[in-house]
Length: 421
Image 1: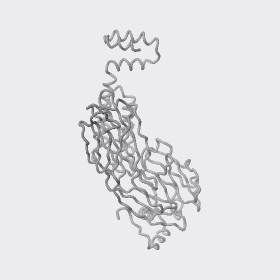
Image 2: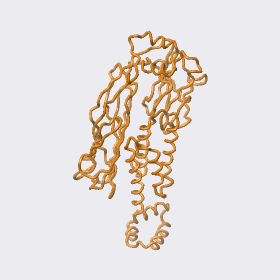
Image 3: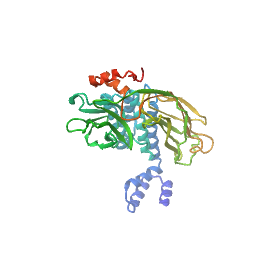
Image 4: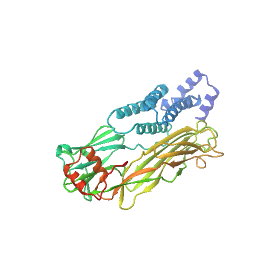
């Protein structure tokens, strides 16, 4: 093979190359392998890669602005991508555009900033996949559950289903568990997914078998509970909601080497980073992702994800919800040896990046430091009680029975307030 490569380097006449390729193909299977080697020798593969990566990076960078129109950015990206990646990258971007427009046009109850960040993260996955780099996992994301709890004191026709709104429900298996006291029954077969942004759980006569012993329904993904829906029985167990605001300590993450010689040598790097807050019930986790890729040479790349515990609830409390925004991201091209600072969004007050430094970079200099804004969480007592905040929302939505409202009014020691009251 080395002999052939040296020959081709010295004889770049197209006729000569084609003759050699035809002869060489008799001893190798897979025309794509041969084409890939020839393209690489003539610089075509590297040129194509740079065109695709440049277009993706421009789109990812454009989505940094909170006012960014993700639909226009994706449409522009589709028109810019080279024809050679029509069946791969272009199709993935087109599918992303269609999925996001459909979700945003429906009653998904997610804000525009959620879709902007979700699109940016999806483009980062498309780019990593194209470059054969580690691809960040796709997590389903819930924006809203309707109703927030099931009042068994309502007539059957007013409590015959649960609706879940969010994103990427079709990317991975989601489990539903019905708790009757301490025991749990898998009722996932009662869950329908009409679209990737909408799920319904059948609570009717042929649906989830809720009984007088039932206490809650839980949505579980990847062995982690992502939603818990209380079941209000005839004598409800009501617990008080409290709110806690805090500023997490700053965190720093240095991504590991996944390609190259560790040295950026003034060639960028192109930097992408994101922060997602994850509620486990007892802990609040900041999941930090960073990817730094050299723009030339051996394309040195540092990439990875790390989880940081930024809050732990007291033993008698459960984190019921994150009240403030839970995601942020940023991307740029580094052009110096300094620590670069950028204003963040959502939970992030400031992104600080070190990309290229003196000497080896990945594993030595390259890192992201995160300064946080204040984070506000909604807490309730541990157990199967229904929180006062949930009951307050149900009352405003007319999804609670007069009987439970009477119970609420009688409990003067509990404040029925919302997150901003």
